[in-house]
Image 1 (tube, rainbow, N blue to C red):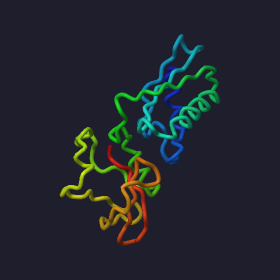
Image 2: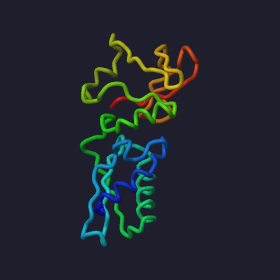
Image 3: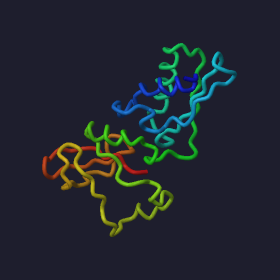
Length: 172
């Protein structure tokens, strides 16, 4: 196993601070691992936050550095790369299942099918609302409560069958 492979393996155990059931690798935010000057020198980990203003970015960087230091890596630098912008398409397949098991409805569809730059969705439209399944009981009988949930990347829904509120991880 190469030094970079070991780092990727160690990053499996670094949880997202907002959704601790997901690792930073499950989220797909770790873009690259490199050694500058060889194994004995600096380990550079490149991260793309879920959005440019994500308040967890500093915590994620600190957690990555701490995890690598605990494994004996002396010099760690976490580089933030904003382009290309992160998308829910980068979530690992098992991340969607973990989200659902945690009580958060995973993104529906692929962001690559969306017009990401199209602002027309900000205006009222006759567009059919997304069908979001309840992660608790599996019901399709759900309703949007608020476009904004516990974090900016989630919306708040309510199941009309089990009556439980739940977050939906927005597709973006």
